[in-house]
Length: 229
Image (cartoon, rainbow, N blue to C red; front, side, top):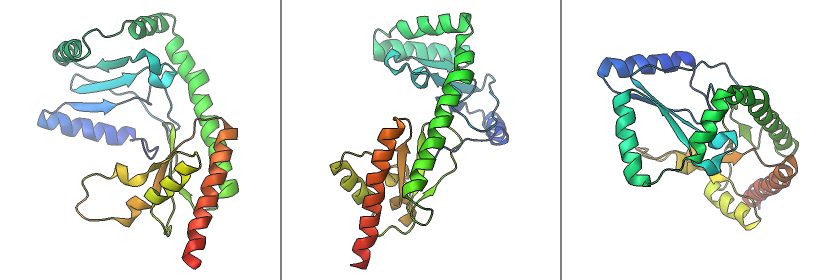
């Protein structure tokens, strides 16, 4: 998130070694990763050791309402996080953990991730890319290779207007996408690329995706037409 890029196993191992070398915990946001929910379209292996704080969630399993996060870490960190959560949340819900325990006991968690969740999202992302290409050729819109998660990263290279303005125009027509500049905090100097990209959720039904992409294509063509006017 937002590009759909997945850190490779080799990159993760190097980060782990670097963190261990300096005595710094390595925090991994694994909301989409392996072993569950497994919304990863490239090869990846789970990694954990006592220096890693592995953060997972039930949200992408289709249970966002359970508000259940999972943290795998050494006992000292787990104790500190448990104490903090008890203060901040006061009364953390028990439904998510109860469901999680039952799914693990029945081996449903890994089975559903592999046979239902991953195939579903993979099919959706392929359908969405095909729809985009029906309305927007590569000279109008480039698509970052999706390796996982539930978003596509679109690059409208040399678009005559900023994607912030494109966002406003799309919003007026009932289409919501996130302008790319929100994902580039702390830059030392302006970078035009940040105003040429948008993040798109590919999960809605294909009919809704096509309706939205059609409007997106119309607004992109409108922007190019205004430049030539």
